Length: 177
Length: 177
DNA sequence: GTCTATATGAAGATAGAC
DNA sequence: GTCTATCTTCATATAGAC
Image 1 (cartoon, helix red, strand yellow):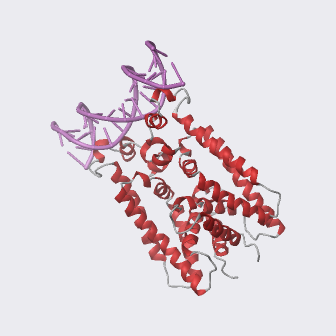
Image 2: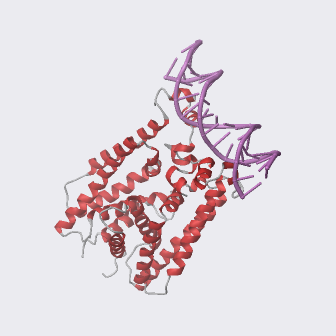
Image 3: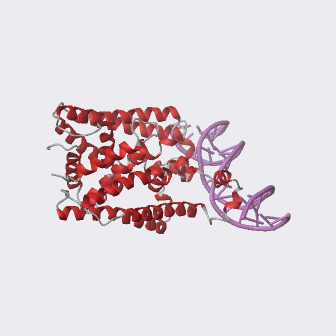
């Protein structure tokens, strides 16, 4: 995961991977049939982790509460898995079509989780949004974007950032008008 | 640009590039000293185009008007240059440190353009935001995200998408409260 | 300015000993 | 289950003819 994130899938050799885990290149083939399967297993594992972690935090709550839980969860989880998040976005094209399909379905399930919350809030009148599906993609992109600039020694703590983003999400769905 | 976007910098060979433009691999070295310079020139050209296109559309207007112009410009421009946008985000790590520095400075200049607008609107009371810098990064991530899912044959036209996003941006900065 | 040919190195994957 | 050795292919880059 580290090597793929730092150098890109195509640029990482099986020899480098072997060196990182302390074996020779040939030995890797006892664990994976080929390099491509290795990538797929990493991405699949990441998506499974994401969905099950999210499922644990889900409550049957008011839309605004659910949205807050989602936003805070998303920032925390994606911050803790930078490498996996990066390669999940970047290396999709290196998957075979069927492997790609699998990952995309899991991703869609995560997005639907959010758009369902937004749709419920739209119907209840808690949120004033034009399009729950588009809004969910916009919110996810915005939240995931933290990963591209956040530094541990930066101006703001992750707690502060989480708070600022949650307020922006609240505004975005225009709750409270 | 197309090849890098589709396959990733490391996975594209000089032979493939040569074939795409109709020459043999050796002939490419009359145009670029090496593969790395080729990548840098593409990214540099993209950032220069972005900044000069943006500069053309800038007006000395009310903050809300300026924000609208920025948001609409961003969606349009990035939609028209998907390949360049994708590799600008993905292939930064394949640049030498000084080439990376150059691109990052140009990117920061673009981000500052937006955060200046947000800061002006914050001071004038037009916008209610916590942190102009963070808000600018959030808005840019959100708008750029359109590229990851937009399809020409999708449910919504780019005009409609532009409109929906502009309304979300308006809400996000809480103008009109 | 393009070509063919090539130098040099490294890639993914496999074979077979231990 | 790991090792060394190797097959085969392809990479970037260069040399020198035309």
